Each structure stands twice: as C-alpha cells, then as structure tokens.
Image 1: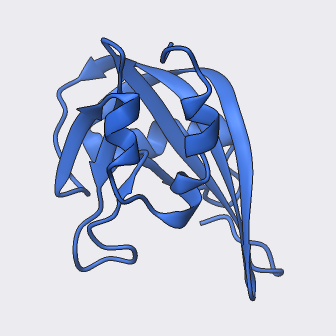
Image 2: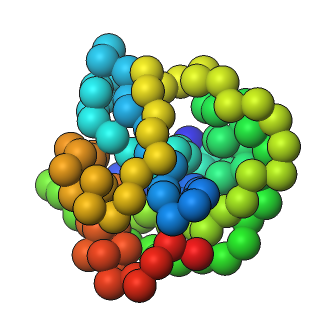
Length: 137
C-alpha cells in the first residue's frame, strides 16, 4: 500500500466499458466499506507505478488481464488525518475469465444505473465527471 507519512493514500481504479456500460464491483461485507460499490482497483504498493498497480489489482481481484488506455481523472478526498488520491483509468480487457476473487458481485451499469448504486466516498466523487460524458468510451 502506498501511503505517505502524512496519511496520503494513492489508489487506482479501472473504468472498463462494454456496450455502453461500465463495470462496477461490490465490496465484501466484512471489509472496510462493506457492500458498497466501487470501480475495481486498489491501493498502490510502494515503488509501484500507477499503471502497474491497476493491472495488478484487476488480476488479483477479477482474474482479468487489462490494457490501460488513458487516465480519465485524478480526484482527492481529504478527511481528518487522511488523504486519498484516486487515479481512474480507462482500461480494456485483454484476456482471462472474470472470477470474483475479492468482491461479492459485479455488474455492467449504464450511467443512470450508476446513480442508483451506493458507492464508496472516493468513487462517488467520480460521478459528476462520468455524468458529463456523452457516452462511455
């Protein structure tokens, strides 16, 4: 996990699309932010580049190989004693078979469906930017 001495955590998220829908995943009940939805990804490990992190996280969480296309948005969430920076990347699936190794559910959601899901705080901050897109790439 890449966390600085100031409590700053770097997080990556994969924005994976198919047929106009975006892949989202539901966190397990026993973990932090249990049962909330998120864009799959996770914390950057020390010495790891952001793009390496998202490829590793998707392999570990969903058993998929992805290709990172481009950075969509970096957003920050500041709370007392901590700071999180979420780097959201557009990605495509290159291979593998989706297996839920970390989440309890996944779904392909349209923009209107995304608004009806309860997301983690940091992932929720991406919504206004996603809403402005005419369509998911």
